[in-house]
Length: 221
Length: 210
Image (cartoon, rainbow over all chains, first blue to last red; front, side):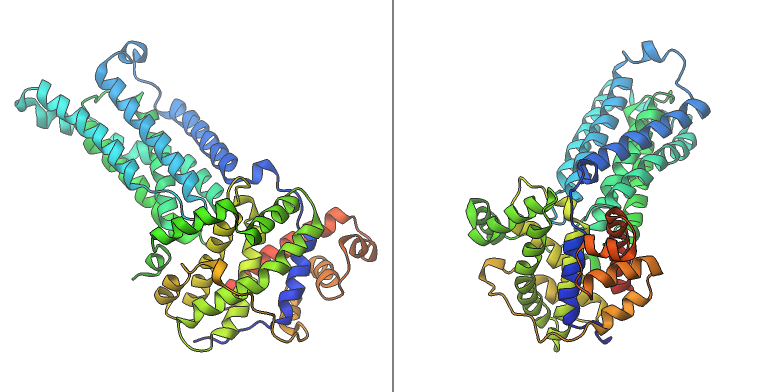
Protein backbone atom coordinates (compact mmCIF):
# COMPACT_ATOMS: atom_id res chain seq x y z
CA UNK A 1 0.00 0.00 0.00
CA UNK A 2 1.55 3.31 -1.03
CA UNK A 3 1.79 6.16 1.46
CA UNK A 4 -0.52 9.09 1.27
CA UNK A 5 1.17 12.25 0.15
CA UNK A 6 -1.09 15.16 1.02
CA UNK A 7 -1.96 16.98 4.27
CA UNK A 8 -5.37 18.19 5.49
CA UNK A 9 -4.22 21.79 5.56
CA UNK A 10 -4.03 21.53 1.81
CA UNK A 11 -7.80 21.09 1.53
CA UNK A 12 -8.52 24.64 2.64
CA UNK A 13 -5.78 25.94 0.33
CA UNK A 14 -7.26 23.93 -2.50
CA UNK A 15 -10.72 25.33 -1.80
CA UNK A 16 -9.28 28.83 -2.03
CA UNK A 17 -7.82 28.02 -5.43
CA UNK A 18 -11.01 26.42 -6.66
CA UNK A 19 -13.14 29.27 -5.39
CA UNK A 20 -11.02 31.79 -7.23
CA UNK A 21 -11.17 29.87 -10.49
CA UNK A 22 -14.91 29.42 -10.68
CA UNK A 23 -16.82 31.47 -13.14
CA UNK A 24 -19.34 31.07 -15.88
CA UNK A 25 -19.74 27.70 -17.51
CA UNK A 26 -20.09 28.40 -21.23
CA UNK A 27 -22.81 26.52 -23.09
CA UNK A 28 -20.22 24.96 -25.37
CA UNK A 29 -18.45 23.38 -22.43
CA UNK A 30 -21.43 21.13 -21.71
CA UNK A 31 -21.35 17.51 -22.86
CA UNK A 32 -24.39 17.70 -25.17
CA UNK A 33 -23.11 20.48 -27.43
CA UNK A 34 -19.58 19.12 -27.39
CA UNK A 35 -20.69 15.66 -28.47
CA UNK A 36 -22.97 17.06 -31.16
CA UNK A 37 -20.18 19.21 -32.51
CA UNK A 38 -17.78 16.29 -32.41
CA UNK A 39 -20.14 14.01 -34.28
CA UNK A 40 -20.97 16.64 -36.89
CA UNK A 41 -17.37 17.71 -37.39
CA UNK A 42 -16.08 14.16 -37.58
CA UNK A 43 -18.83 13.15 -39.99
CA UNK A 44 -18.01 16.12 -42.19
CA UNK A 45 -14.34 15.16 -42.37
CA UNK A 46 -15.30 11.59 -43.23
CA UNK A 47 -17.66 12.87 -45.90
CA UNK A 48 -14.77 14.72 -47.55
CA UNK A 49 -12.57 11.63 -47.38
CA UNK A 50 -15.39 9.53 -48.76
CA UNK A 51 -16.00 11.85 -51.71
CA UNK A 52 -12.30 12.03 -52.47
CA UNK A 53 -11.56 8.32 -52.28
CA UNK A 54 -14.74 6.33 -52.87
CA UNK A 55 -17.54 8.50 -54.10
CA UNK A 56 -21.20 7.55 -54.34
CA UNK A 57 -22.31 4.59 -56.43
CA UNK A 58 -23.51 5.27 -59.96
CA UNK A 59 -27.20 6.21 -60.11
CA UNK A 60 -27.45 6.65 -56.39
CA UNK A 61 -30.62 8.67 -56.94
CA UNK A 62 -32.61 5.76 -58.36
CA UNK A 63 -30.96 3.29 -55.99
CA UNK A 64 -32.42 5.23 -53.08
CA UNK A 65 -35.85 3.91 -53.99
CA UNK A 66 -34.86 0.28 -53.67
CA UNK A 67 -36.07 -1.35 -50.46
CA UNK A 68 -32.73 -3.00 -49.73
CA UNK A 69 -30.86 0.27 -50.08
CA UNK A 70 -33.40 2.00 -47.91
CA UNK A 71 -32.94 -0.75 -45.33
CA UNK A 72 -29.15 -0.25 -45.29
CA UNK A 73 -29.47 3.46 -44.75
CA UNK A 74 -32.22 3.21 -42.16
CA UNK A 75 -30.26 0.71 -40.08
CA UNK A 76 -27.16 2.89 -40.19
CA UNK A 77 -29.14 5.98 -39.23
CA UNK A 78 -30.97 4.18 -36.43
CA UNK A 79 -27.72 2.83 -35.01
CA UNK A 80 -26.01 6.20 -35.28
CA UNK A 81 -28.81 8.11 -33.62
CA UNK A 82 -29.28 5.60 -30.79
CA UNK A 83 -25.55 5.28 -30.12
CA UNK A 84 -25.11 9.05 -30.11
CA UNK A 85 -27.92 9.46 -27.59
CA UNK A 86 -26.42 6.68 -25.49
CA UNK A 87 -23.01 8.37 -25.62
CA UNK A 88 -24.60 11.60 -24.36
CA UNK A 89 -26.17 9.82 -21.42
CA UNK A 90 -23.01 7.87 -20.72
CA UNK A 91 -21.02 11.11 -20.53
CA UNK A 92 -22.52 11.71 -17.07
CA UNK A 93 -20.88 10.64 -13.81
CA UNK A 94 -24.30 9.47 -12.58
CA UNK A 95 -23.97 6.57 -14.96
CA UNK A 96 -27.16 6.94 -16.97
CA UNK A 97 -27.34 5.20 -20.28
CA UNK A 98 -27.79 1.60 -21.15
CA UNK A 99 -26.53 0.05 -24.35
CA UNK A 100 -28.60 -3.11 -24.17
CA UNK A 101 -31.88 -1.54 -25.34
CA UNK A 102 -29.98 0.04 -28.21
CA UNK A 103 -28.41 -3.27 -29.19
CA UNK A 104 -31.78 -4.97 -28.93
CA UNK A 105 -33.57 -2.40 -31.06
CA UNK A 106 -31.04 -2.26 -33.84
CA UNK A 107 -30.59 -6.02 -33.66
CA UNK A 108 -34.32 -6.55 -34.16
CA UNK A 109 -34.25 -4.26 -37.16
CA UNK A 110 -31.42 -6.21 -38.72
CA UNK A 111 -33.08 -9.55 -37.96
CA UNK A 112 -36.27 -8.32 -39.60
CA UNK A 113 -34.36 -7.38 -42.74
CA UNK A 114 -32.50 -10.67 -42.84
CA UNK A 115 -35.71 -12.64 -42.33
CA UNK A 116 -37.40 -10.73 -45.14
CA UNK A 117 -34.48 -11.43 -47.47
CA UNK A 118 -34.39 -15.12 -46.62
CA UNK A 119 -38.10 -15.31 -47.30
CA UNK A 120 -37.92 -13.56 -50.65
CA UNK A 121 -34.72 -15.01 -52.08
CA UNK A 122 -34.21 -18.67 -53.08
CA UNK A 123 -31.97 -20.63 -50.74
CA UNK A 124 -29.46 -21.29 -53.47
CA UNK A 125 -28.68 -17.57 -53.57
CA UNK A 126 -28.23 -17.03 -49.85
CA UNK A 127 -24.52 -17.79 -49.61
CA UNK A 128 -23.60 -15.74 -52.65
CA UNK A 129 -25.50 -12.73 -51.37
CA UNK A 130 -24.04 -13.02 -47.93
CA UNK A 131 -20.48 -13.20 -49.17
CA UNK A 132 -21.03 -10.49 -51.78
CA UNK A 133 -18.40 -9.02 -54.01
CA UNK A 134 -16.74 -6.33 -51.90
CA UNK A 135 -16.51 -7.69 -48.39
CA UNK A 136 -12.90 -6.61 -47.94
CA UNK A 137 -13.58 -3.09 -49.16
CA UNK A 138 -16.46 -2.92 -46.68
CA UNK A 139 -14.37 -4.18 -43.77
CA UNK A 140 -11.63 -1.69 -44.51
CA UNK A 141 -13.65 1.36 -45.51
CA UNK A 142 -16.14 1.52 -42.69
CA UNK A 143 -13.57 1.65 -39.89
CA UNK A 144 -11.48 4.15 -41.84
CA UNK A 145 -14.50 6.38 -42.38
CA UNK A 146 -15.30 6.00 -38.68
CA UNK A 147 -11.90 7.29 -37.55
CA UNK A 148 -12.60 11.03 -37.61
CA UNK A 149 -16.00 10.80 -35.86
CA UNK A 150 -14.55 8.42 -33.27
CA UNK A 151 -11.62 10.70 -32.50
CA UNK A 152 -13.93 13.69 -32.22
CA UNK A 153 -16.42 11.87 -29.96
CA UNK A 154 -13.65 10.58 -27.71
CA UNK A 155 -12.26 14.09 -27.42
CA UNK A 156 -15.69 15.36 -26.42
CA UNK A 157 -16.10 12.54 -23.88
CA UNK A 158 -12.67 13.29 -22.48
CA UNK A 159 -13.98 16.69 -21.46
CA UNK A 160 -17.01 15.09 -19.81
CA UNK A 161 -17.10 12.71 -16.84
CA UNK A 162 -18.24 9.28 -17.99
CA UNK A 163 -18.98 6.93 -15.10
CA UNK A 164 -18.07 3.94 -17.24
CA UNK A 165 -15.24 4.82 -19.62
CA UNK A 166 -15.32 1.54 -21.48
CA UNK A 167 -19.05 1.59 -22.21
CA UNK A 168 -18.93 5.26 -23.16
CA UNK A 169 -16.13 4.45 -25.58
CA UNK A 170 -18.18 1.59 -26.98
CA UNK A 171 -21.12 3.92 -27.65
CA UNK A 172 -18.77 6.38 -29.35
CA UNK A 173 -17.33 3.56 -31.47
CA UNK A 174 -20.77 2.39 -32.53
CA UNK A 175 -21.91 5.91 -33.40
CA UNK A 176 -18.73 6.46 -35.42
CA UNK A 177 -19.15 3.07 -37.09
CA UNK A 178 -22.69 4.04 -38.05
CA UNK A 179 -21.35 7.19 -39.73
CA UNK A 180 -18.88 5.05 -41.66
CA UNK A 181 -21.63 2.59 -42.54
CA UNK A 182 -23.94 5.33 -43.74
CA UNK A 183 -21.27 6.77 -46.00
CA UNK A 184 -20.09 3.42 -47.29
CA UNK A 185 -23.68 2.34 -47.96
CA UNK A 186 -23.98 5.08 -50.55
CA UNK A 187 -21.03 3.63 -52.43
CA UNK A 188 -21.42 -0.09 -51.94
CA UNK A 189 -23.48 -2.10 -54.39
CA UNK A 190 -23.87 -5.20 -52.26
CA UNK A 191 -27.37 -4.47 -51.07
CA UNK A 192 -28.52 -7.73 -49.56
CA UNK A 193 -29.45 -7.55 -45.88
CA UNK A 194 -27.44 -10.78 -45.53
CA UNK A 195 -24.32 -8.93 -46.64
CA UNK A 196 -25.14 -5.94 -44.46
CA UNK A 197 -25.78 -8.03 -41.37
CA UNK A 198 -22.52 -9.94 -41.84
CA UNK A 199 -19.95 -7.47 -43.13
CA UNK A 200 -21.31 -4.11 -42.00
CA UNK A 201 -22.04 -5.82 -38.71
CA UNK A 202 -18.45 -6.99 -38.37
CA UNK A 203 -17.06 -3.60 -39.34
CA UNK A 204 -19.24 -1.70 -36.89
CA UNK A 205 -18.50 -4.24 -34.14
CA UNK A 206 -14.82 -3.63 -34.79
CA UNK A 207 -15.15 0.13 -34.47
CA UNK A 208 -17.22 -0.39 -31.34
CA UNK A 209 -14.48 -2.55 -29.85
CA UNK A 210 -11.86 0.01 -30.81
CA UNK A 211 -13.93 2.71 -29.12
CA UNK A 212 -14.27 0.61 -25.98
CA UNK A 213 -10.53 -0.07 -25.83
CA UNK A 214 -9.74 3.60 -26.41
CA UNK A 215 -12.32 4.59 -23.82
CA UNK A 216 -10.78 2.42 -21.12
CA UNK A 217 -7.44 4.12 -21.63
CA UNK A 218 -8.39 7.67 -22.53
CA UNK A 219 -11.61 8.44 -20.68
CA UNK A 220 -10.31 8.27 -17.11
CA UNK A 221 -10.81 11.39 -15.00
CA UNK B 1 -14.44 -8.29 -10.18
CA UNK B 2 -12.24 -6.44 -12.62
CA UNK B 3 -11.31 -2.85 -11.86
CA UNK B 4 -13.82 -1.37 -14.25
CA UNK B 5 -16.53 -3.71 -12.99
CA UNK B 6 -15.96 -2.42 -9.49
CA UNK B 7 -17.18 0.95 -10.66
CA UNK B 8 -20.09 -0.43 -12.61
CA UNK B 9 -22.18 -1.64 -9.65
CA UNK B 10 -25.75 -1.02 -10.79
CA UNK B 11 -28.20 1.32 -9.06
CA UNK B 12 -30.49 -0.43 -6.64
CA UNK B 13 -34.16 0.37 -5.99
CA UNK B 14 -33.16 2.37 -2.92
CA UNK B 15 -31.27 4.76 -5.10
CA UNK B 16 -34.46 5.54 -7.04
CA UNK B 17 -36.14 6.40 -3.74
CA UNK B 18 -33.26 8.59 -2.75
CA UNK B 19 -33.31 10.36 -6.08
CA UNK B 20 -37.04 10.95 -5.67
CA UNK B 21 -36.47 12.46 -2.26
CA UNK B 22 -33.76 14.65 -3.64
CA UNK B 23 -35.96 15.89 -6.46
CA UNK B 24 -38.65 16.83 -4.01
CA UNK B 25 -36.25 18.66 -1.78
CA UNK B 26 -33.68 17.46 0.66
CA UNK B 27 -33.18 21.05 1.94
CA UNK B 28 -29.42 20.72 2.20
CA UNK B 29 -29.06 19.53 -1.34
CA UNK B 30 -31.55 22.08 -2.65
CA UNK B 31 -29.40 24.78 -1.14
CA UNK B 32 -26.29 23.31 -2.74
CA UNK B 33 -28.02 23.28 -6.11
CA UNK B 34 -28.89 26.95 -5.74
CA UNK B 35 -25.30 27.78 -4.74
CA UNK B 36 -23.91 25.83 -7.68
CA UNK B 37 -26.27 27.56 -10.08
CA UNK B 38 -25.12 30.91 -8.75
CA UNK B 39 -21.51 29.78 -9.05
CA UNK B 40 -22.02 28.71 -12.65
CA UNK B 41 -23.36 32.18 -13.37
CA UNK B 42 -20.10 33.65 -12.06
CA UNK B 43 -20.81 34.20 -8.32
CA UNK B 44 -17.47 33.49 -6.64
CA UNK B 45 -18.77 33.88 -3.11
CA UNK B 46 -21.43 31.24 -3.62
CA UNK B 47 -18.89 28.86 -5.08
CA UNK B 48 -16.56 29.17 -2.11
CA UNK B 49 -19.45 28.72 0.29
CA UNK B 50 -20.64 25.61 -1.54
CA UNK B 51 -17.20 24.00 -1.52
CA UNK B 52 -16.74 24.66 2.19
CA UNK B 53 -20.18 23.23 2.97
CA UNK B 54 -19.75 20.04 1.00
CA UNK B 55 -16.16 19.30 2.04
CA UNK B 56 -17.10 17.90 5.49
CA UNK B 57 -19.85 15.79 3.96
CA UNK B 58 -17.48 14.43 1.34
CA UNK B 59 -15.00 13.70 4.10
CA UNK B 60 -17.46 11.58 6.08
CA UNK B 61 -18.59 9.88 2.89
CA UNK B 62 -15.01 9.03 1.93
CA UNK B 63 -14.12 7.76 5.40
CA UNK B 64 -17.10 5.45 5.55
CA UNK B 65 -16.50 4.10 2.06
CA UNK B 66 -12.76 3.64 2.43
CA UNK B 67 -13.13 2.00 5.83
CA UNK B 68 -14.73 -0.93 4.02
CA UNK B 69 -11.59 -1.38 2.00
CA UNK B 70 -9.07 -1.83 4.81
CA UNK B 71 -7.34 -0.06 7.68
CA UNK B 72 -6.04 3.49 7.81
CA UNK B 73 -8.94 5.01 5.95
CA UNK B 74 -8.78 8.48 7.52
CA UNK B 75 -5.48 9.31 5.90
CA UNK B 76 -6.66 8.32 2.46
CA UNK B 77 -10.03 10.00 3.03
CA UNK B 78 -8.53 13.49 3.05
CA UNK B 79 -6.85 12.81 -0.26
CA UNK B 80 -10.18 11.54 -1.61
CA UNK B 81 -11.83 14.79 -0.48
CA UNK B 82 -9.26 16.81 -2.39
CA UNK B 83 -9.57 14.59 -5.46
CA UNK B 84 -13.35 14.94 -5.33
CA UNK B 85 -13.38 18.72 -4.89
CA UNK B 86 -10.97 19.06 -7.79
CA UNK B 87 -13.10 16.78 -9.95
CA UNK B 88 -16.29 18.62 -9.00
CA UNK B 89 -14.58 21.79 -10.15
CA UNK B 90 -13.07 20.48 -13.37
CA UNK B 91 -16.22 18.59 -14.38
CA UNK B 92 -18.86 21.05 -13.21
CA UNK B 93 -20.08 21.53 -16.76
CA UNK B 94 -21.48 18.00 -16.61
CA UNK B 95 -24.02 18.91 -13.92
CA UNK B 96 -27.37 19.49 -15.59
CA UNK B 97 -28.87 22.39 -13.64
CA UNK B 98 -32.36 21.00 -14.19
CA UNK B 99 -31.42 17.84 -12.29
CA UNK B 100 -30.73 17.39 -8.57
CA UNK B 101 -27.26 18.26 -7.36
CA UNK B 102 -27.00 15.44 -4.81
CA UNK B 103 -26.85 12.45 -7.17
CA UNK B 104 -24.33 14.21 -9.40
CA UNK B 105 -22.11 15.10 -6.47
CA UNK B 106 -22.40 11.61 -5.04
CA UNK B 107 -21.52 10.13 -8.43
CA UNK B 108 -18.38 12.24 -8.70
CA UNK B 109 -17.39 11.41 -5.12
CA UNK B 110 -18.00 7.72 -5.69
CA UNK B 111 -15.89 7.69 -8.83
CA UNK B 112 -12.96 9.43 -7.15
CA UNK B 113 -13.16 7.39 -3.94
CA UNK B 114 -13.16 4.10 -5.81
CA UNK B 115 -10.33 5.32 -8.02
CA UNK B 116 -8.25 6.26 -5.00
CA UNK B 117 -9.00 2.96 -3.31
CA UNK B 118 -7.76 1.12 -6.34
CA UNK B 119 -4.58 3.23 -6.58
CA UNK B 120 -3.78 2.78 -2.89
CA UNK B 121 -4.19 -0.98 -2.97
CA UNK B 122 -7.44 -1.15 -1.03
CA UNK B 123 -10.29 -3.50 -1.80
CA UNK B 124 -11.93 -1.39 -4.48
CA UNK B 125 -14.85 -3.76 -4.98
CA UNK B 126 -15.86 -3.50 -1.31
CA UNK B 127 -15.40 0.25 -1.38
CA UNK B 128 -17.66 0.38 -4.44
CA UNK B 129 -20.52 -1.34 -2.64
CA UNK B 130 -20.15 1.01 0.32
CA UNK B 131 -20.56 4.16 -1.71
CA UNK B 132 -24.18 3.45 -2.57
CA UNK B 133 -24.93 4.73 0.95
CA UNK B 134 -27.22 7.70 1.20
CA UNK B 135 -25.48 11.06 1.51
CA UNK B 136 -28.41 12.37 3.55
CA UNK B 137 -27.66 10.00 6.41
CA UNK B 138 -24.08 11.12 6.69
CA UNK B 139 -23.19 13.68 9.33
CA UNK B 140 -20.49 16.07 8.20
CA UNK B 141 -17.01 15.35 9.50
CA UNK B 142 -15.00 18.40 10.56
CA UNK B 143 -11.57 18.97 9.08
CA UNK B 144 -8.67 17.51 11.01
CA UNK B 145 -6.28 19.99 12.66
CA UNK B 146 -4.92 22.27 10.00
CA UNK B 147 -1.23 22.28 9.42
CA UNK B 148 0.90 24.21 6.95
CA UNK B 149 0.33 23.03 3.40
CA UNK B 150 3.72 21.44 2.94
CA UNK B 151 2.67 18.96 0.30
CA UNK B 152 0.72 21.48 -1.72
CA UNK B 153 3.88 23.57 -1.69
CA UNK B 154 5.77 20.61 -3.12
CA UNK B 155 3.26 20.30 -5.91
CA UNK B 156 3.45 24.01 -6.52
CA UNK B 157 7.20 23.80 -7.06
CA UNK B 158 6.59 21.56 -10.03
CA UNK B 159 4.51 24.19 -11.80
CA UNK B 160 5.92 26.69 -14.29
CA UNK B 161 6.92 29.97 -12.56
CA UNK B 162 4.00 32.10 -13.74
CA UNK B 163 1.39 29.57 -12.69
CA UNK B 164 3.19 28.88 -9.43
CA UNK B 165 3.16 32.49 -8.38
CA UNK B 166 -0.52 32.90 -9.20
CA UNK B 167 -1.54 29.79 -7.29
CA UNK B 168 0.74 30.56 -4.35
CA UNK B 169 -0.70 34.06 -4.03
CA UNK B 170 -4.21 32.73 -3.86
CA UNK B 171 -3.89 29.51 -1.89
CA UNK B 172 -1.06 30.20 0.53
CA UNK B 173 -1.23 33.97 0.84
CA UNK B 174 -5.00 34.10 0.67
CA UNK B 175 -5.20 36.92 -1.88
CA UNK B 176 -8.21 37.48 -4.08
CA UNK B 177 -7.86 37.21 -7.84
CA UNK B 178 -7.77 41.01 -8.14
CA UNK B 179 -5.09 41.36 -5.47
CA UNK B 180 -3.04 38.57 -7.01
CA UNK B 181 -3.29 40.19 -10.42
CA UNK B 182 -2.12 43.49 -8.98
CA UNK B 183 0.80 41.88 -7.17
CA UNK B 184 1.96 39.98 -10.25
CA UNK B 185 1.35 42.86 -12.61
CA UNK B 186 -0.91 40.89 -14.94
CA UNK B 187 -4.59 40.98 -15.81
CA UNK B 188 -7.25 39.10 -13.82
CA UNK B 189 -7.91 36.96 -16.87
CA UNK B 190 -4.29 35.83 -16.91
CA UNK B 191 -4.52 34.86 -13.24
CA UNK B 192 -7.65 32.81 -13.90
CA UNK B 193 -6.03 31.05 -16.83
CA UNK B 194 -2.98 30.23 -14.70
CA UNK B 195 -5.21 28.93 -11.95
CA UNK B 196 -7.19 26.77 -14.33
CA UNK B 197 -4.09 25.26 -15.91
CA UNK B 198 -2.46 24.58 -12.59
CA UNK B 199 -5.59 22.91 -11.22
CA UNK B 200 -5.69 20.58 -14.20
CA UNK B 201 -2.00 19.83 -13.71
CA UNK B 202 -2.63 19.26 -10.00
CA UNK B 203 -5.34 16.74 -10.77
CA UNK B 204 -2.94 14.82 -12.99
CA UNK B 205 -0.20 14.91 -10.36
CA UNK B 206 -2.52 13.70 -7.61
CA UNK B 207 -3.32 10.68 -9.77
CA UNK B 208 0.24 10.04 -10.94
CA UNK B 209 1.75 10.34 -7.49
CA UNK B 210 0.33 7.01 -6.36
